[in-house]
Image 1 (cartoon, rainbow, N blue to C red):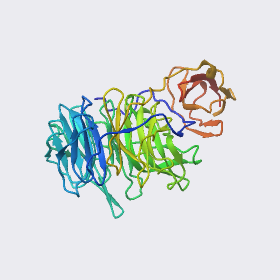
Image 2 (tube, one colour; image 1 turned 135 degrees about the vertical axis):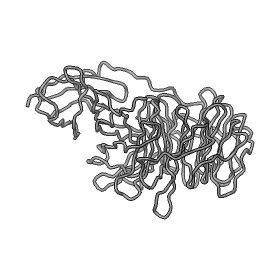
Image 3 (tube, rainbow, N blue to C red; image 1 turned 90 degrees about the vertical axis):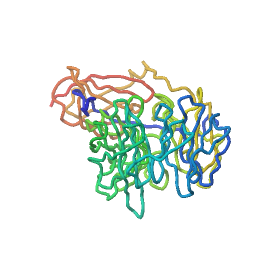
Image 4 (tube, rainbow, N blue to C red; image 1 turned 120 degrees about the horizontal axis):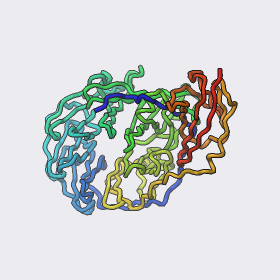
Length: 457
């Protein structure tokens, strides 16, 4: 495995726009047979055949349905104080479930369960599989203190587990876990003492050690300052290794909620994370960001928003999380509003969904096709750059819809650079040596254009 976090030629990217559609969409949800639970369903997963689904509850154990949610078998009975927080199918009929007091393992697609041997004293929040290893993360919050057992690893299909916490914060609370296509692991940790040790951690050696992942968040469009990450709620890595993280960040004394996006290579250069999606606002009280991300394929992703009846519920994106569309048709409102808690795949285009605090299993067959990438020649003519030559301050016109910007030297090297954005002006620092460069724009809709400029100090 290549353990290098950077490429020999690293590009710097600058975000200049984001978009959200806060309107009820044409996607319609239908109900299957409800699960017998008082406190509600907590997690859901399907087997590789997609006709068998397994769901956990907060108060009544685990249920398995061999017919897509029409009938249910009660396969794991738990006491009322034992919650099932996560379920993951890891292949070869093996299903792993995390509870508030341990890890469960099924070797027959969720029909029977045994408790695994694991050093767990706090709730297991998420389970992921990469390569031949299965990982679990743990975290709890009590009386203002975050705590956990950190990250656990199993190398025998979930039978036994051991801790892998070198480099993680001392509180060992890890709320979310994800893996990319290279097998690198990402752990989302709280900033428990408020000293900046929270955020995202990366392991490039199968969990043996962890290092804090750069989170340089651009707050433009919400607040004028850069943002400091303070608390994370959801984490996912796209099939092309883009990192999505939802939560809270602070800039200029204001708490900002939203979804933050980057790639491993971009973050390694110090480039800004992109702030997007699900109603990013400069108020803790106006919006709660997504508690879950789930990818239907390489572009289509489901999310959620816990903002109550006016804006909460399931959302979907057809372009990897840049633009989000609300989809609540057919979803019952709960006393606390809408909050889609988890998704899983069904046959064909079907998607199953559960709501937090609800006993219903929802499904839809209506998720639209992914947004195609279209290169629009007309936009290639719309961007102007001046002054040219430049001493380091470049003004752009007509680039407001661009999402990413990169700078390429005459010899083909992708350059790192410092930049700030205000209105339609991009200020590029004097790190660039004299010479000829190409500045390249990529818009959310796939439009691209490039311009040549000269630096002469």
